[in-house]
Length: 100
Length: 391
Image (cartoon, helix red, strand yellow):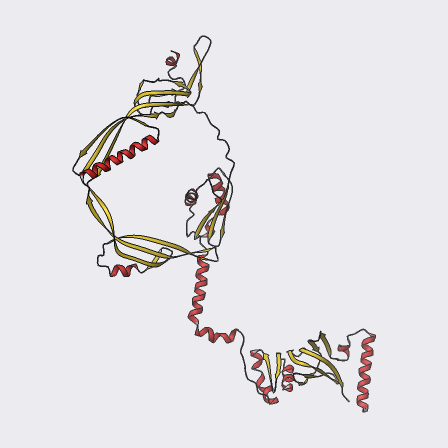
């Protein structure tokens, strides 16, 4: 990890602390991706940067400095817009892939 | 492909229903957004094909091909809307004592008829008038259901005893003759059995004199005279018969066809039969069975359909024999006598004469009968014939 990345991480953790201290929504302050899951069949995603890959079994979403991998069966993007996206299907796993 | 989706997102192009099938993705987008896609497709090296078009604008070519059908549907709806603004059927509910004909007459008086505009009928006002016209109607409701006008009434089921208003009446003879018997229940008899009376003569007087101690009349009590009076009186009866009489013969030329009627215009195929008819002035007996078109049980339309049965016939004039004519006349006389007997008339004497004339035959009969007589007539002057009664 180079100095730049360490600095970025420090900034991020500082932002999180700041949000905690002032009771502000963390997703707004540190630009974090927001997931809202309904049972095991629906997942609403907000504040993301885009889709990296999409297959029936895997959807990889790019967030701020992290990637999210949603695994399951028959995955379908019900809605995809600038604001949010909705994924439906049999969701088995939501995994955070931290960039090295 | 993911890049294409991300670029769509960046250009505010909404996508939904994205589904992966092997190497292709199927998704939905707005038609206006689809027109923005070609540069993005070029940049990402993606190809897009339209699988299905959905929405009203894509139906315009479909409408264009079937324009007559849709115009017909719209016209039909417009006509239905127009027709449902009028009354095309009337039903009476709850009337037992008042007949349908009486209610129909009332509606006619009020200017309510088939084909009248619903908005021209002031239901509340008509309800008041209906109650005012029929005294035994305790409640009424006039309302519409579809194109049907309902006249609902409730009648006073308990028949109140009719108050007898004593107006003061005499009984007078309604024909001349000899009184056979007189039984007076109310009033003062003016005649006795065996008296010969003229038509209009008072038989029983409704004014009953009140005497004082010196037997002089001080007042009259007025009653409705009531009595059973029998009179012997002559009755004349004449009956004639023509020697020729018509007999209807049906030919085998019968027509059974359907018809349709819109308002007063009837459409049928009878004119075609008439066209091929050998005798245009033939006589027909026509029986029509007519049914009204009803939508959803209550929307009666001014459209009728049904069947017409038309039978051709001709009239043949036959001649009675003398015996037949005599028999017919005697039968008629017999029926007349039976009718009299049913009314309580006794035949005392009967003289029958049958005369032959130019057209046929005539029966002249003089009957002497004993029958109930007397009609009630209102007392005109209060102190009539005071002196007579005194005697």
